[in-house]
Amino acid sequence: MKALVTGGGGFLGGVIVQQLLEQGYAVRSFSRGSYPLLEALGVEISRGNLAEAEAVQEACQDCQIVFHVAAKAGIWGNKDAYYRTNVTGTDNVISACRALGISRLVYTSTPSVVFDGRNLDGVDERVPYASDYKSAYPATKATAERMILAANDERLATVALRPHLIWGPGDTHLVPGILARGRAGRLRRIGKVSNLVDFTYVEDAAQAHLLAAARLSPGSPIAGRVFFISQDEPVPLWDFVNRILEAAGLPPVTGTVSPRLAYAVGWLCEVLYGRLGLKGEPPMTRFLAEELATSHWFDISAARQELSYQPKVSVEEGLERLKAWLDAEGQS
Image (cartoon, rainbow, N blue to C red; front, side):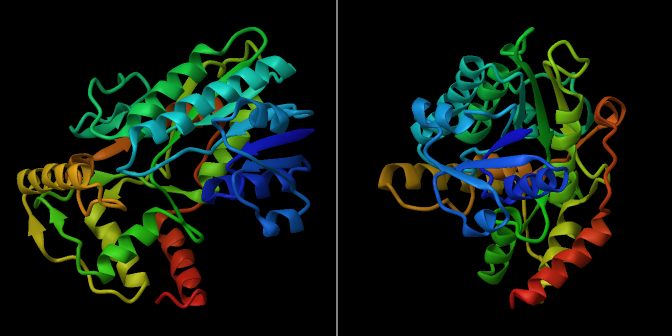
């Protein structure tokens, strides 16, 4: 059986590829770049842009299942760019599956689609989508997730997974962002309350995708549904951040600013970056200020029951693995 993984050269996509190979799949990766390490593993590389329908359909040729992992992530950026990748790209993936008779599509979503700036304490999949988004990333991912779920029918079975804050060795987003801000002395605790947050170790996130794939078919109980994924071990956010900093030999975060001040700074940064056309991500945005000041952890009972998902890596073990990787990479 051949599987296509969009974004197979990325952090999560790469681990999904590895696990698929271990299960005997033939794997094709669709990304914009080249990935010699994947080719060395026997992965077929298809290069192209998600926003180009012909390239997506060509990548889907001869595949029996698609894992749509690729997305434009981040807290800031051109709205059109987010739309092209996350919405148009998803529409192209769905259309290619229909045109080629592919019957299974596993989509990587995000819990951010339900984040409205308030605490999310142990919520399950019944929580509604946010009514207002302060970032193009969750807004476009919410649109794409709705499209994925609406596409489910008697010919194409779809499922959406919402892994929360994926991390681990090889991370290209969460951990590097924390370390970069820590080294620059730009980290501050937002508020004095120790807000609880869920994380998802990358191998567990990938495992959830393969479990969903094994149970997905037109008319199956999980078809057309969404599932939260995490380590099911909510931890105080700033304790976790400090453990990552400690793993890299950096001092802990001690400074504190109020949530109201952080939000105001985020608004000001957005105005300045927008009007001046500054490159890169602002040091703070309204979306980031709210995320850092609130609790967001989830009830994953549905994933446990319907997918037989069981987190295998604890936060403590994950931190030990992360430290070993940082040491090997010379980052500690």
